[in-house]
Length: 348
Image (tube, rainbow, N blue to C red; front, side):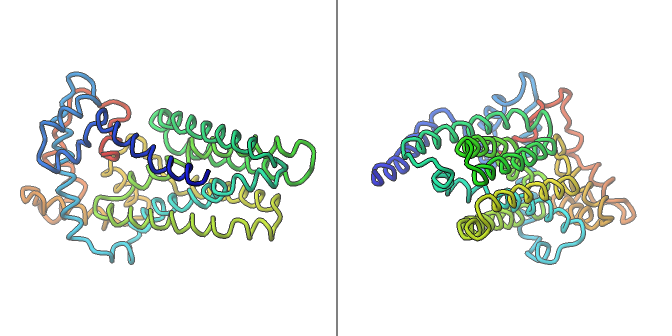
């Protein structure tokens, strides 16, 4: 049985990946980076309305690649290790969101689902297997729903609903270990709600936020830090799960995790900006304004000037105004992009 399970886990994904190559187009960003701009335009035409000038998008992707290359060589790790106030706030939001995704205990709970079901009173292996299948399908359906809602309702509302729902769900799970009346039902129903609420907000959103708040100057390094801290938190939560649960009691552990979800909700309410429909330039301006630190704008202005010498202006000209006069700012299409158009660059 174990051999078959591991074999299916290795073979089935290979088939899925192979057959997906026949229907999945190449990333426009990758095509542009390989100087295959005509192919990139063909792919972008599949994503944008008929008549939309995708050449503008290709131009912006090309500029973005060039600026990221400049930033990668111009900016060292000092900006991450010893950040200015604006960069510090940016890292707090991006890295903090990545950590929060695992701090709610998702990996630990998923790893030990069978153990939790067994402790709640569900001893039948067949019943456990079917419950796991149903929980997986619920999680999948919630992720699909989240994909439709993130660009319609915004990031903050979905995060708040997700965290509040997880907090209530974990309380329900704790009831399974307090009394004996219908304890199995509380466990299964609570776990189903927990996975659904996680997948509708914290699951996909925790990777979306870092990609939308990190400035081009620190994007590559900051994303690596966010990913590293996410996995470190997952390792800590998973490796201490059983020890903490046994020390506190299962009911106490799930109540504690419910409180953790509420604390993260309060933190996000204070620090998390709404990134829906906002370009990176707006996010840099946002962090500069709330921290009173304009060094982030000046640093990005220097990148613009290095990329295009024609942007040299008088020293007294504010960085924001100079940036606004950048030639690529005038290449705004007459027709507005679709509601989720800005995600193309992120996903590419």
